[in-house]
Picture (cartoon, rainbow, N blue to C red):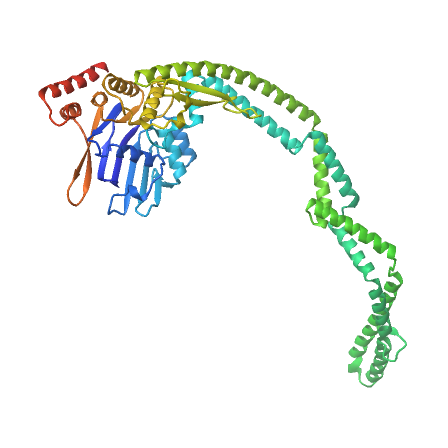
Length: 557
């Protein structure tokens, strides 16, 4: 329930704080006084689009805030907790619109995106009139209202439960099969594992293959290079390293006989001579073992080509293909052993789908009967409210192939406001006044069918008067027995039905225009209703008539 609304520098309102109570609150005032500014402010606080034109002339920004009492509304408390916006049951909305057009929003003092503000606003306020924020125009909300009106909570809950159970089983099947057919997946995996196991190498083996290929591909260069090394190490030339080291070693021995301090040099040259000899032996063995087999080179190149192909195919480095083979083999073994589990899951899916079909059929039948009842009830109320034509809650099959939580059909509210014309979707009805009265008829017909705590009606009495206007007022008062109702009106018959009365007055001088919003006591209410009845000159009879209207409304309850 809306408790307070505060606006500052909004349109022509300089500063206003309004306190609201339970029941029906009516808002009246002279034409052009700005009665709908309250509705506009609530629209913005409910996530409506704002622009710089809403900021009072000469001001930097407009500020709007509202406090709601949410009581034990579990859906609101759960939403606030889910969004991390809960604050011990508080529900405060705030919005600032700057003169350059930017906008910011807060919920319980925390900055939020406009989508969050709108999501919460839709749960708090239902606005009917020439405005964008109208939940009844949403097809999902229409189906929800139809189900609530028909008392389908249990049936819809069972349908939703079975739909979720079906999705859960399908998810487990997809996990076992990788999302494909079980047999096809096994066949594909077997082929991939066989191919990888025939050709893939682990990291060490792959490195050895690369070394072999590099050696074979450069065999000629290796042979030539090794021959040159052998000649320099121990060839027939005078400057072969082995001969030079041997002569140097012999010379050092003769010198050491003259001075023992050169003994260390002799040892070092002896070690060098031994190392050179070993180097020559090693090189000789390498030359003997050097492979110049062109067929082996072709084989290694073919093997590397296959690995390159597999690497591109699986998008893995060649050195990781063996690990991939191991991973795929494990999945293959799991699937080959999962046949029994898959059979059980598929049987479970079929059982759940059969149960869903039965539950959805029951829900569809109940919805069809409820749609007829709702259509008759709203049509009758439209007639009472001075509107010809008819209302229908049309059900259309949902073409989705999978079980859906909402059932097998969608709902579209259709209305014809003129005899002989075919009904059209409610969201396409052009007249704001007609739309408001149709919304009122739906809300009254579905009294208690939704959880919205505050209903707002703007221009609900447009184009009516007399007895119809009184009926409109009575229906609003009846609706207010269940939830808080706010109605902007210019008809005394509607204004007299209010539990609370707000008057909007505009005043101007040469410099500016301001709006004052004030709550009326009993005497002021009588005077305001009399003004609405009698125009400029208020007579004693007009005042008496106004008092009679207020008393009648009070006595009616």
